[in-house]
Amino acid sequence: KERDQAMKECEEYKRECDAITKERDASTKQRDEAMKERDQAKEERDASTQERDEAVKECDECKRECDASTKERDAFAKERDEVRKECDESKKEYDALRRELDASKILLANEEQQANGARKSLKAHLDSQGTVAESLERAQQDMADLQRS
Image: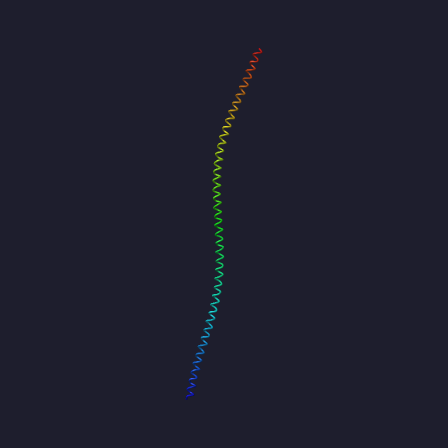
């Protein structure tokens, strides 16, 4: 009877041991799966981190290019403004020179009219002097003729 009892207890311990072994095996299997998932998640995290780092580098490069483009644009804008200012100044100078030229043309036209008037006056005077000289010469000739006669 004790032996049967001991056998019974032994079988019960064996069942408990088998159940514990099954639980342990299931736990080991769950642990292995969890470790595999953890390793996979770690690999994905590392890949994501690497992608992020590359994206950050690319973003930094884009930012540097953008900054360089902004500086270049600002330099072009400054140069454009300087050229516009020079152009405005040149236009003002041109307009002033144009007004001065127009005034000079008016003065020249007036001086030409005066010169033409003076020429006409001088010609008329010279013509009249020629007539006076001719008249004087004829008068002298006439007096010489009278004296001879």
